[in-house]
Image (cartoon, rainbow, N blue to C red):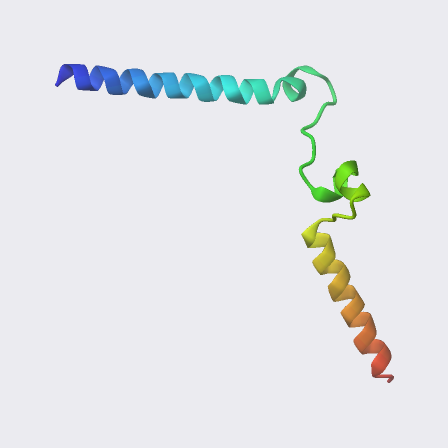
Length: 78
């Protein structure tokens, strides 16, 4: 019974240590370089995706809604 608890505690501590190393590794640039920030994960900020014509789905929805609103306003003059 005592061995099981020791093994479980050892596994939990190892997991916490690995997660801490991962977070520090991912944030080295942000933590240690003044003015640095995490890179954007959005499609509109990625030049390779823009060259291929791939855009952010959120921006597509906003643009389509704006176009639809403009089209309905033009078809119904006041």
